[in-house]
Length: 432
Ligand code: IMP
Image (cartoon, rainbow, N blue to C red; front, side):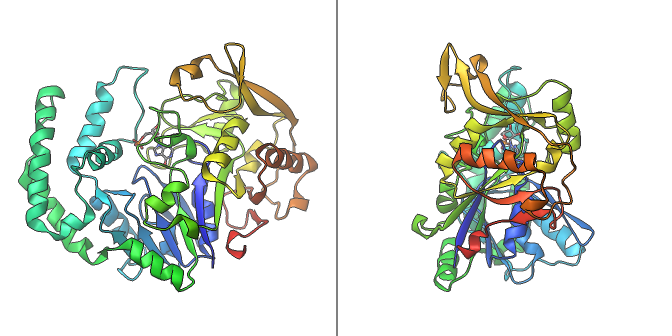
């Protein structure tokens, strides 16, 4: 029995989808615990392409149970669309395969509208570059205790009352502040009651189901979305997402006790990318950055935006190890670095003549920070065919070794391409 959490160590898009897919083979349950349909990953299985935003990709495997925990913000229309697409590809989803926490908060149409209105109202330089999916406003209402939960779909009168109360306030904002059309409570209610009809059989107590599974010896995989530097508390605030993306939230966001987690895996892309606005100390604004972007196919899976690219940042990698308690790293996209004569690893920053070894809490410091780099030799060989560490050129092995040394964390997995077979599983966390 092992319960494993997977998190991103950077700004998301580290290639979690592929690693989650790989480790799902060894799990019985797969759990989403935070974020919503701001996340996204694409998987190609037996020539068919699947794009997931909400449902864990574990749904592709028979006999795996998938869970959407209380920490997720759920857009029911998007979930149903995802379920319909799966059904159209011959993979019907049913309540024996997917459970939704009654405590998960629902993204409402006014959250999406508020997201786009607030973002447009921000001055340039202050924009977050959100995905526009209503994530922040939904979490905002949760914290303000005005949220509507999946369980409310099962109680029609209470749903209507909550929609009315919320819209009274939000419509005031739409018409008076944002110059947008107000929303009719009845229309929102009708739409959500239609969702309720279809989703009701899936809504249950996820915490109880996970605990029963644990006691029965099931292997549970907790699948994080986004990355450590997008964490609402520990990331580059305010240029972050609105949830805790770090491993601790696997427990809070699903109702699973912390002492039952056995292993945390941090996904580390061999270089760094970021979508949206915000600080990115090792960002490259030169042809090398363009090369990484092109070779790595660095476009956001949810919004299709070009990802900003830069060198590997050891400071944030160490930060991720500390914040998440990472036991092992999965280093992805090593193949994208082939052909770079020299690789750079940021080992600290300098600001106002001082050396910084951790990410500063004050966003203003980032503008003054310069990364201090260590040069590492690159390799010229393509490595997409490597299937074991011995197949890698010595310089690529040295790069991995240096990451392990610098982060004081062993590599459990190396990935050299998008295919399942292009992965070296050096240490299986489910066999700890
Ligand atoms: P939000 O999560 O839509 O509110 O967006 C807040 C910030 O998080 C923006 O910079 C987004 O680009 C970023 N973000 C949200 N989800 C992801 C993701 O899955 N990968 C990478 N960046 C993300």
